[in-house]
Length: 204
Image (cartoon, rainbow, N blue to C red):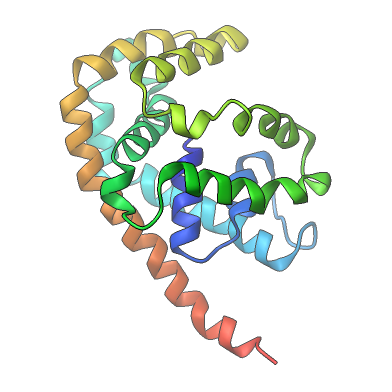
């Protein structure tokens, strides 16, 4: 769900924005199904997810949710991180505004949707036209997203209550974001450095 963070980290790592965005819609080994750069983007997304899920800050952040809502805390936190990234974007990326970045990402992704999973294509029908990534800066918009997810999937009904915990501990989550996100950027850039020799080798 943290679409904005995955796109931003992909840019920092010079990785495929398309691959990083659609990774949650691809099951199993993507090798041979997509171009090498998209496959690398899918794998980067999965590495970032693993890094984030196991990070002590994320584990501590989950404890801010009351027990009934802790089961869905990982989903809510994805939106929480995107909220603060959108909110503080100008402090993180001084050379490119959030609308400029979203426009750039859309240009990179939309022309290539024809060979992507159907569910991912459906996501893109709304993601760009409704400016989700920009609206994530608004807490009430996060509430709307959580409510919409809970209505579509009754098993996720507790997402509705999880928003109250987000607001209750808003400043704590903000502090966690500033501890976590620089580490995520550093991790993404490390992935970029690991790929650099391969990129040089592949040049004619």
